[in-house]
Length: 554
Image (cartoon, rainbow, N blue to C red; front, side, top):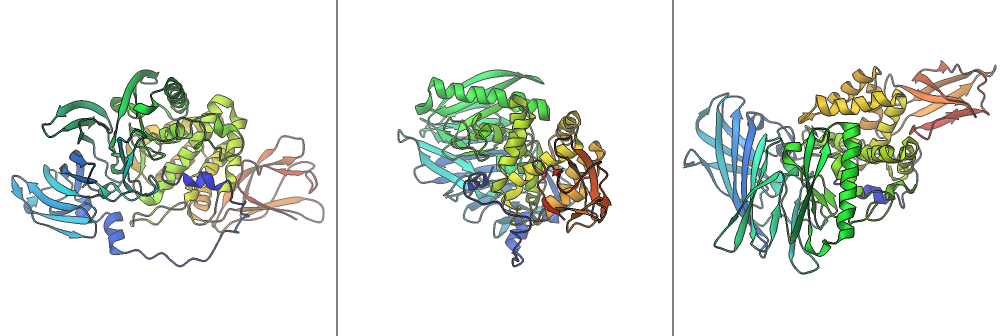
């Protein structure tokens, strides 16, 4: 969700011709801090996280947190030392292991602890980190990370966390890498007694304290990536319903501010949630977290895909804060945040990129899920119009894929350009039943798993029976888009090829004559005769509506 702002840019960004936005830029320089955060060193791969118990108290008046996190792990190798992560503005008060306090050292946002003896491979063990401090305050949540300290219109505290990209260690200690999702966890959050905390999973208990606080215990029994772990504190009203889906009964819960407990707003949310679940279970398969339920939680920030507890701040209206980035009208028929963030339950939360460099997997498929929502309710032509209408927001500034091992994502084009890419893949496959089976198959094959670029491209190519490797390389790993060159020889015979920096680029495209059905023609980097009867320069038609390409006819 982090870069949804790119959708609003379409209101003023002019269309960029192929290659126009390719600028020479200095090579990015990464520090040891970046590597400590993004690289899987032996100090991180030596243990596999199985369970957390995060127990934190939130002092809202002082914007201060304190608490602990229990790490239960299985040793992958023999080791005596490991790394966990916590931002260095927060204090590690102590680390306990087997009733003893362990020594630790810190480097930037990494913490290293040493055990008194070797932890042997295969052993299941645990340690607890106690910590405290004033966490980083988000100034533009969710586009920057940390705590979002706000108040509602009645002056009541309205607090939430959002930390995608920056990392969950901005507010709680954990093994902060997307490659290792904890199998289950308990989230215990203590807040002033007149407020409610909502986190991921199911509420399993509420405890009253003598100090004017209440502790809310939330149990998550499905794997969850760290940035999805959230707390949401406010003067909430709770209501619920049961949705009958592919796996049976799904508990759906809503937590909205007391001030918004109005029938029109409640009905708006319920309608959008039901329609979203119906459309996405059709396209992607069953909702991946039936055991933990599905929640919409109102927040002061716009939204975030917090697993089973989606943050919602779109103010009970259709569109993206009332706007349609596609300028087609189709984007104003549904609530953008409900649809987009729910799409992440499949792509981002079920299927998770193992490295932040492949965040394009999350955002490209989820951007395209918006079009599939439209397709389900309004038809394929409406879906294609929406995808095409979003194109002016593409910057072509840098590749969708970021550099590995330094916790760095790629271009914000991963949203719109990524959605355009998937629409092209669908168009090339030219079989919507097969395309749907591929989308559902992805969520089945990689159920609750971490993936990379190779996993996604290999699976789609295999199931489609088409080698998409050069196409994904062009659109994900490079900045420019390919140009289709069509030339006619002296006898009027047409020939075509792709101009692309990807060696061996190969892509089929729909070409035809005006007024007639287009044919799917496969072309490569080398000129090939285009065998379409009666094709001339004057009656040539190319599907540039569904293909994001440059065209040169001569």
